[in-house]
Amino acid sequence: MQVVILCGINVVLAVSLNLINGFTGQFSIGHAGFMALGAYGSAMFSLHIGAHWVAALAGAGLPAPLAAAPAFLMAALLGGLLAALAGYLVGLPSLRLRGDYLAIVTLGFGEIIRVLITNIDLVGGPRGLPGIPRWVDLFWVGLGAAAVIGLSVHLAHSSHGRALFAIRDDEVAAEALGVDTTRYKVMAFVLGAFFAGIAGALFAHFLGYLNPNSFTFIKSIEVIAMVVLGGMGSISGSVLAAIVLTLLPEVLRPVKEYRMVIYALMLIVLMITRPQGLLGSRELDLRRLFGRRPAAPGAARGGA
Image 1: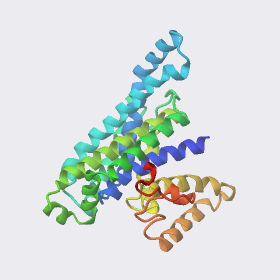
Image 2: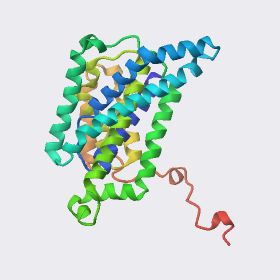
Image 3: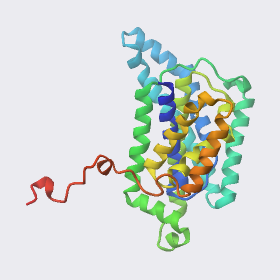
Image 4: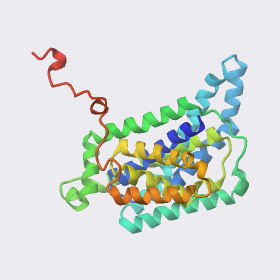
């Protein structure tokens, strides 16, 4: 069950980064920083306020899962909003940068957040933050994954999504056609950061303990690998790659001495044979996968 829940948290992270890197063509490598803000922000709320709510509701006779639900929902939203605010503040000035320069700015942001957390004693500093209520189960992770996937699918099929894809394909041409490129890039940045914060809240309330070393530069690279391996811009590709890259180290655990070597070699082979990612820019069609063709227009009305 622990591996399944970690798969779900990584799905939220990968799909949220896909909104920035895949949909809009930006190259952000500071996703671990947004996740850390969501994790620590939600954990501090739960420790100092949420736990009292749960005790009061449980004292009134509510079952424990129902008593914890409003407190965790508020903690997760708070963590997401904190990360989204940071995404806006960092993204607005830095999104006028492109390519390597934007990557360096987002990398610096992620490291600043990690160093700040390490040096603030109120959140545990380098010792970490223990005692976080463990309110997260499969339901909450599934709800978070469904929310980010549903929003991404809706966005991809909307006029806003087409504007994002136009910016990714040719930013100068999109701007010449009247697309407000800065506004759309900031929007993608804020949405991606918000769901990274939600993933951080899920992570904190599942493990019950946070350590700054969980949010290093390596964590951001892991999430980027999921997006690139799945296919830039493919929502189902990000979901598939997040599950594969979470399960792979567990599958290779019996050969623990060579586990990371085999893991790295498999990634290299995959990227050589499928440089566009597992699904490229396509999406999995479940109706085709299970041998059912989409209904012809008018069939639902009897084909009249």
